Length: 111
Image (cartoon, rainbow, N blue to C red; front, top):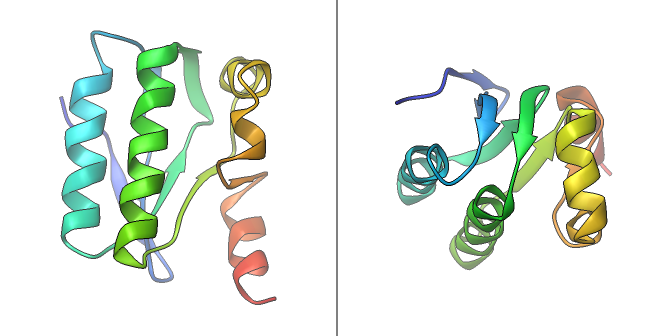
């Protein structure tokens, strides 16, 4: 499985949908890490995510650390209520860069 993606400014935006769970997280992980290996700044638009479990959050943590180690920017944007609930319960919203929208992230980059 490959999730839709597009370019916005100097970011690649990956747009997973549905469940990010043990069955789907490996494909998302491969896609995100491939972009980071190619030196692309990366945003993950979670607006269409209906379910997120710990395997999904692990993908985001790994991608965040890989981006940091490569000097790249990474963030989660437009996070659905379902995904945000999990991020808040695990306090990952305090660790991972989370923005209300792509535009909000781009504005934050300017400050």
